[in-house]
Length: 99
Image (cartoon, rainbow, N blue to C red):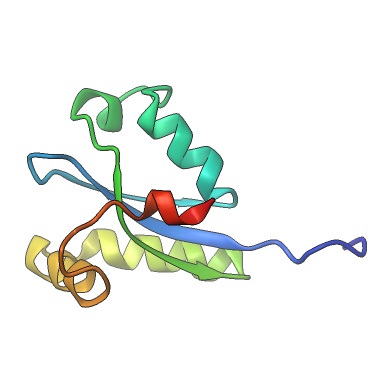
């Protein structure tokens, strides 16, 4: 690595107004959120309008991030909701605080 800031990765959960959840991983959370919110990501998130950031966690290791994403995706919905509620009880959109 050349002397810059160490790269970080985020596992994140988006929610729609109707409660549909999407779990993803990215190395640039702000850019990825903008893509979801502007409908630039074809498929699931644009079809179901899943745009509100309700949970995220950060790691420096891509393998850890991918494993965590896989782990959360395998959980039942109730467990995913409990994870979100533990950090964000009101399911507020956390994207505004990222700037």
